[in-house]
Image (cartoon, rainbow, N blue to C red; front, side, top):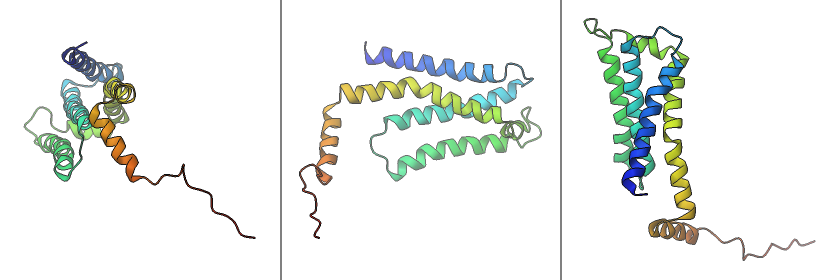
Length: 157
């Protein structure tokens, strides 16, 4: 199966999870469209950023700033926009943030949405490692002290 189709299936899975987890979480509630939209907005930003984080090979300062900054700026914008009384979603994020179902939905969306990708990446690295992966592991192993060939210390009596 080509990388394109694997990516398409992964994106389809993530979009289904993003839609149906909040739908089932709030199925017996009276949540309005603005609250559901706010939940989907922050959930999709976190999901996409965590998806990208799984593909990052080297974590440097700018990577952290970009990734966590994107999530923080999105959430901050939602708080600011939900504080303006003329907007129809006035106060939405404040009510959502008090709800355990809101936080549970975000957690479930991220975990369930990324689980197949995580499993695929783990299996790929274990059974079909790339040349770069093998070189990285060889470099890491060469820096570790070898305990296999060392002799135990003698205890003098």
